[in-house]
Image 1 (cartoon, rainbow, N blue to C red):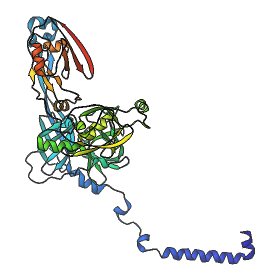
Image 2 (cartoon, rainbow, N blue to C red):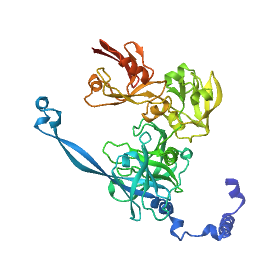
Image 3 (tube, rainbow, N blue to C red):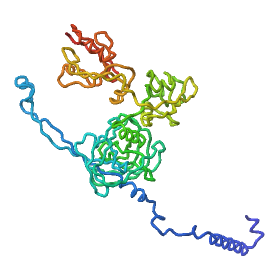
Image 4 (cartoon, rainbow, N blue to C red):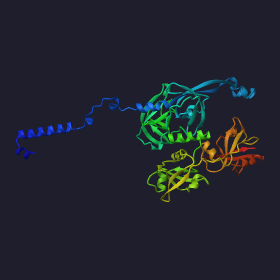
Amino acid sequence: MYALKAQFPESMTRNVFALALIGLIGFCASLSAAEQKIPVTREQVTLTFAPVVKKATPAVVNIYTRKLVQNQTPLLLDDPFFRRFFGEGLGGFQRERVQNSLGSGVIVRASGVVITNNHVAGDADQITVVLSDRREFEAKIIGKDEHSDLAVLQLLDVKEPLPSLDLANSDDSEVGDMVLAIGNPFGVGQTVTSGIVSGLARTGVGASDLQSFIQTDAAINPGNSGGALITSDGRLIGINTAIYSRTGGNIGIGFAIPSNMARTVLTSILKEGHAVRAWLGASGKTITPDLAKNLALNRPSGVVIDRVIPRGPAATAGLAVGDIVRSVNGREVHDIEELRYMIASLPIGGQAAIGTLRAGAERTAQLPLAAPPDLPARKKTQLSGRQPFAGATAANFNPALADELSKEYLEPGVILTDVMPRSIAQNVGLQPGDLILTINDKPVKSVDDLVQILSVPAQGWIFTVNRGGQILPFRIAG
């Protein structure tokens, strides 16, 4: 720089700088008018979701429900000492009251089909649905599914096509995607909040039996249940269903049922009248860090199969005990809950590509997507007589019944579906859901076996039941 200055006088340096500045100004002047245009409209200066909201909100509804409940008001005769002398029928009197609740829902068919949470409308005696334009409709329940916490309603007396939302493919969602939550929090009226997808495939939330929730930080509060979680282009990717909160209000952790599960439940209810889902036909364990180490895996992810049901879908696909399930249709499987959800959310009738690892070699199996069979026939039987199961209702345990009861099906057996209050069975300690294993050292494989064993008088009864995976022994004197 110093040598340059020695060769050119200072006045010439100033002239060179001035010429460069003039050239820069000329370059800027040559830019197109479009590149220099100053924003003049609201759309040009504002990032807004208003067009999406205007499109989506007419399809999101407020749901008001009424249910008649009975409360027993205790009297003096409710005391056990007095009941002993005056009988069980004098324990008090019943008072009826109306229980009101509110929630949200989404119109998914122009004919007035609404999908919402089962805990919003599933047990209601009367349902009123209010649209965003204040039109009101009475509604009836077409079907409900407690395991996914979804219910499908039909609006009555619909005279014209109603606005509805299309269901997106929730498998396309990614963490960081912008989303909007629409509902009726606290009954203040239709409200829109914004956020992002905070997490995917969340399990352990406890809001339903089939768990693989979309997590979002869009504000969700009481009254939002059953409302819409939509993408930035206005498609439905989830049904808002739960929040994590210590106070009952929003703290930025909300959960939505993915639209793929909603689609499966909606389709089967409209077609069959009840929810029908595909089943795996196998059981497995989530691969923990310790299990991954034992299996020589580089990371703890996936499910190791520990049992395959004969003639079930997994057996048909060629899965075997010890196989490690890594993916379903190319999507990674992290735990057993996610695997169950993935299979249950797929439409029945097709196939799913199951990526597995067997003896260190990767392979792909084609799993047929079929509903759990209702075989053997349930043959529900109410038990009576002088024996410990009197007052209970027993049925043959099969895959369809296991799905209805949210239980894992491993093999045929006998399950108690109901236990009457104050019956011998209840006094003994039996509960609905108990699987009967043996009675007086005899295996119980069917209802016929059970009835035959109980028909023979005995000096005493020794039997075992499986309750939630725990084997419980009972000993009853004759």
